[in-house]
Structure formats: C-alpha cells, structure tokens
Image (spheres, rainbow, N blue to C red):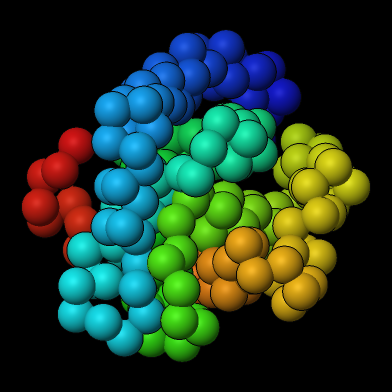
Length: 199
C-alpha cells in the first residue's frame, strides 16, 4: 500500500468513524441515564435462547463511560487501518462477520454471564490486521504491524483469564480467533454478504 494513499484514506474516513462511535455513545448515554442500563440485559447470555439477540447487540452495549472509552480508542485506530487496507464497504462487511462469529462462539462456549462491549470486535479487528499485514508485506503494513504489536499488545494479554470476572476474556479470545478466521475466508464472506446489498 502506498503511504500517501494510506494517509488520504485516514483523512477522508476519520470523521466517518468518529460519527459512528458518536451514535453508539449517544445510544449508551440514553441507556445509562433513562433506562438505568437495563438494555445491557440484551447482551450475550451463553446457551440461553434469549441471549442470541445479544450477538449483534453486544458491541453496542457498554457498562459505563469508562468501558466505552477503553474500547473506543482501539476501535478508532483499528477501523482506520482496516478501511485504508480494504475500503469502507469491505470494512463494514468484515466487522459484521467478526461480530457474528465471535458472538456465536461466546454464546456457545463462554462462562455464564452477560457479555457486552465492543472488545470482541476490537480484538477481532486486531487479529485480522495482524494476519493481513503479515501476508501482504509493505512499508506501510510493517508500520501497522509495529503499532499493533507494541501499542495494542495489551489485547493479546486480554485473551487469557485474569481473575477479573467483570472482563470477558472469552470475548477477547473468540474475537481474536474470529478475526483470523475471517481473514482466511474473506473473499467468501464478502461475496456472501454482497448478495444482501446491505451497504
């Protein structure tokens, strides 16, 4: 990837990514202030039929502002990297695939709890970017990989249990796995999702 093209993509789509996060923040503020966070009960509840609705909703729902911000900063950076590499439409479709696959894994295998937050999506994006930059080397991709491993290295630590039951390490783990799987089946996934004309 050409570095100039990379910077132009970031400059062009930066406002777009911030606007998306603004909508998510607005929804959460509404949930926190007017519903007492009751909508967070719509998160993923493993092996409960009612918990299936949480698969698409979990990345939107957050416990509090601190939880939202801790996910937002990685999401901004990772989103801009993905868009710069694959374009906006592919970014949306890949995020849908990572969300659904990681959510299904959480529902099937995670401990009994209500799993919410965008950390599974963030670690999935991290996994996708790490594998993509490895298989498609360029100066820009090496720069991306350097930033990924040294600035967001904490994501790798988060895939293992750390004793904090308020943190869904399973979401981190299954998100990472999902991102890697999505990378290897990207063409099939994009071809399948394009049939629905979502974007």
